[in-house]
Length: 264
Image 1: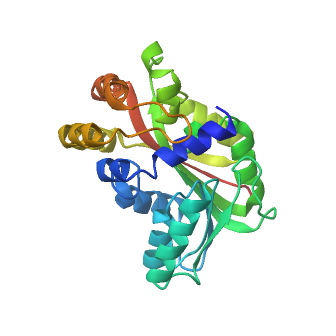
Image 2: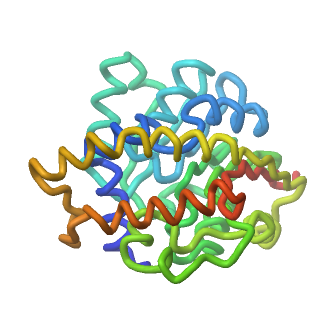
């Protein structure tokens, strides 16, 4: 997936209909799983945390507002960052939560500058995953933690989930849990752990199915377009969601939290 398509994926997740379907945090488990990931990483008040692919800043807002962390959110999509900054100011968190435009594969952050790096439901869309994880490890101080959450698979994906729509929906290149563990290990991290939360993915899939009827009416009133690609979502997305839901219910697709620590 090239940079333009990654921006399109991010753009899709800015659409109001998608936020209505998935919730503001845009990942299974919402901020409840963000809190669990923060616990596994050992985040405490005053930690400087980098949130990679921050989108509208739901995670920095939570980490700053609830845990007292200092957070830098980074994203390719500048209008998402503007929305995040606006929300941060509205909640009087702008001294603790800051936002920077940048690419996960070339982070504009000094080496060893942050206490922790978090990346939720985004690593699967990065074309050069090893480079992105190396960058996360580079900016991390010795003893710091990386926390990743993402959709995982235990089976080979069918061809129907490998096309352009699946890329934009961030499904086409999901990895096995052990693949993500290997990426962290190859970047020099240790104490790597995986925690499965497939039930949260099933819950999100169920909630989306319940809302698809009204969404269909919304699309009839004005078709939802994939930003910068111009594909009509309509039946293509419904077919994709149906196939993905089958794999989710069968356990072929799940959702995991993966953490690792940079050696001292």
